[in-house]
Image 1 (cartoon, rainbow, N blue to C red):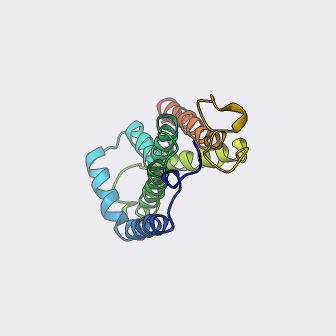
Image 2: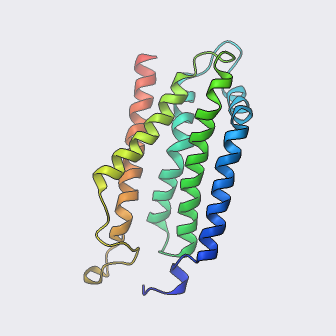
Length: 183
């Protein structure tokens, strides 16, 4: 695929998406207690919370969008729409992580043990750091397929995000095993 306008992000589009993501993060800080309380009402009774459900939810709010971004790379063609979708996934992960951490202090004494929620969210962030570290930088800084390998299924620039997705799934497995074995 040649570099055309259809696969490039426009300055206006990036500005609009960035403004929407920044607004969502700011609003998630202010509304985090209410959102987290509503989430915990669904997941918990007055006397207990499911540690497995909390761990999965903690991971899902931060790591799930990153796995979704990896899936977008796997199933879509390099296009501006796919790039915007991946930006939205990253923003959704930041919003989810913000809700979990900004709302925790206000709800600390109301619900029983919610530590697995935070362990899941921290595991997702650590998987992002680990995946980004071991994948390094792409061989080239574009989604274009390399010229020497036009039949390649995946562009090499997609590999870091795919490595992050694999690390996220491995971390989810580890967190769920931790909860079932030690909680």
